[in-house]
Image (tube, rainbow, N blue to C red; front, side, top):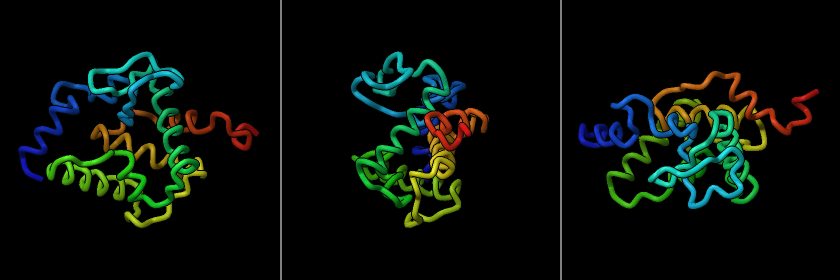
Amino acid sequence: MTKKIILSLLLVSGEMYGKTIGIENHNGGNIRVHSIKGWSGAVGLDEWKHIIFATDLDGIRAIRRVLRGYDRKHRLDKLGPICWRWVGPAKTYEQLLQKKGYLRSICQKMNMTETSFVDLRDRHVMMRLAKAIVYSENGSQPYPDSLYREAFNIGCKKCQQ
């Protein structure tokens, strides 16, 4: 990547000024919507339509919710298509390069390739993917494993035994 693209990524993420937008919003996945209706723990939207959550746990639970939708609604089961859907369409060549870098980052964190099967019904796989997404979105992993375990055990009868 060129220096210009890297600098613009740092400015957009807010990393040069401390916490990233995702961390400030308790939304490590940088989930965007047009309305917060139906999102548990959502307290507002920022100027870029990222959800602002009340807690980090709410933000991680939202990542889980989106990933479950990718399985149930869209039937996505390969790492590449899951990542492409997460980051959305590229409108410029620079955005396309950023998306490719994002995909490489996720692949590295997951120790998989674009064509690797991802079982979004397995809470452990979803948790690993959520951690990779948070890292790739924010450039760091600010949340402890215990937070992810709590978010991904909720509603899981097998986990509560």
